[in-house]
Length: 167
Image (cartoon, rainbow, N blue to C red; front, side):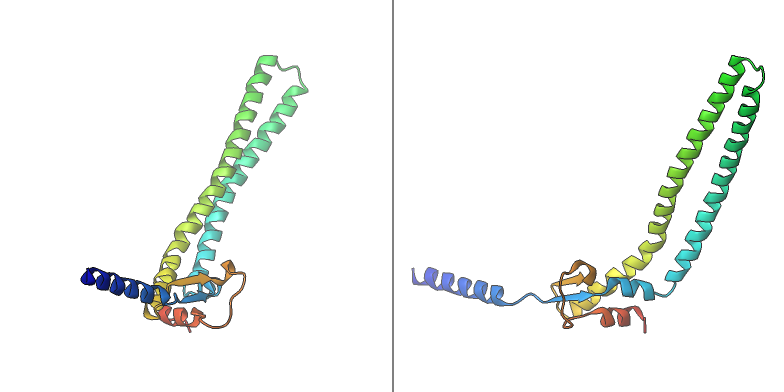
């Protein structure tokens, strides 16, 4: 009986000592780190080129739509049959729908491309934060944009930048 009581007492003592240790918290300025990452500026150039390529195709489609509208307007003022006008209206409607579909698809493609290009940078930052946090025995590291308040203590931004080779 004494052994059981002693064992329970030891287990309780270890549990209390384990819970009494405070978890360490820190923060980083993720946005600043991202802006200073080597090669991040190349993403903007690639995205701009991609966007301009899509805009050129969209512009061609818009010009085709405008031309078809003008042709229809000319036909509508003449004695063109209703059957022909109906065919032209359907063509214009389909062109307009294709143009709208292209615009919405292009917007999603640009967002997808941006995520694809930025993901390797995000992964490097995440790995660096993890390394610095583990070395400093931090339980939690928050981005300052997500904190209502943060003091200057335990700011790991400089350490993470050093880990990434950013001066």
